[in-house]
Image (tube, rainbow, N blue to C red; front, side, top):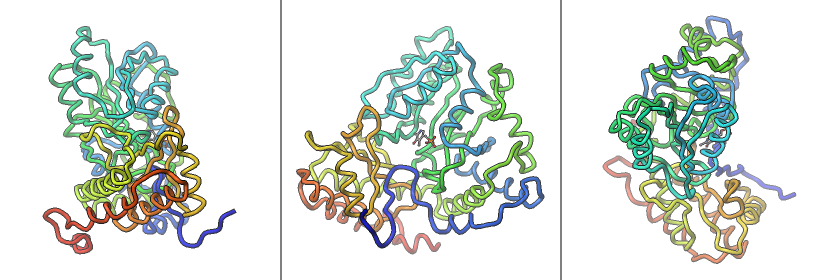
Amino acid sequence: MTRHQGRHFLHIPGPSPVPERVLRAMDMPVIDHRSAEFAELGKTVLQGAKAIFKTANPVIIYPSSGTGAWEAAIVNTLSPGDKVLMVETGHFATLWQQMAARWGIEVDFIPGDWRRGVDPAVIEEKLTADTAHQLKAVMVVHNETSTGATSRIGEVRAAMDRVGHPALLMVDTISGLASADFRFDEWKVDVAVSCSQKGFMLPPGLGFNAISDKARAVAKTNKMPRSFWDWEDMLKLNANGFFPYTPATNLLYGLREAIAMLLEEGLDDVFARHQRLAAATRAAVDHWGLEVLCQEPKDFSPVLTAVLMPPGHDADQFRQIVLDNFNMSLGSGLSKVAGKVFRIGHLGECNELTLMAALSGVEMGLRVAGVPHRAGGVDAAMTLLEQPLPGNAPRHLAVVK
Ligand SMILES: *Cc1c(COP(=O)(O)O)cnc(C)c1O
């Protein structure tokens, strides 16, 4: 086995690297989750999470992965036989569609080519045709982690408003939240689904649902059987900082610290940093002469970049070479694009120099693997990152402010 000094470079688009500050914050004794001390922690994170979703509405925190939070969104608001609209943006949209189908939901799944985000015009067309208002929900993925395409949720909402359709807007922002601009209240999202191990920079284990008044009202009359995921059970105890069953206490310590870090930097600066690192990554990829999977510049993801391998070269073989030689994990291609793409995560605990190291690993890997490319992508990324932050002090000064 290859031995390595120094730290492992985890550049998959989730789990993302956990900052030391967060790791230290979790290094705490487990406390009684029915104690007054716990209630303070509970109230702090339940309140703090609202700021990250940009909502005044409740945010529910489950001890679960993102998939669990998907299920919570479905079982609280929908029932077997209900019709919903979804868009095939990639692997995660497809999994959400499959889950809904297992719950007996009838999904109108708009086909996609996995190379762009949701087209709001198609949503508008579908809703306009649904004059009987049979569609109960529009369910879309904000940042499609399998392809590196981000959907414009504000424009989807605008399309729904133009039609005046009453469907709920449900958004998987599992890899979008805290990395890509997301505005729950302003975009009138009804249910937002997220989890801990992407933009929140935490280990896996927390799932989130932000819920609108409208979604909560629908849930109250929804007959779908549910227990563990029931919103009302949660909200009743959350009001005093408690949970109906044992929460993931130490992850909540970490969440408190992660929220503090995100708000210290400022969400707008967090989003700008992700955009900048994504632009530098694409500059390198373009220079190498490789192709970014996402074909729609408006939808380029600030979270990750999926790169197509030249024909005849296997992406997984390449990723193995990078791991063996340079101790870096890159994301694999999922289902339809398995072996065809590799994904560079540039989310969360990531800055100019960690990105440059990651891109160096990719360029060295291309050379070692004998993948045809034009040398100097790293330099192209550096040239972009040397430019000052727009209208801002140098980065280290901006952080101190
Ligand atoms: C990671 C991810 C999921 C799945 O989350 P798990 O925590 O693995 O259950 C779903 N959707 C998107 C967009 C994701 O990035």
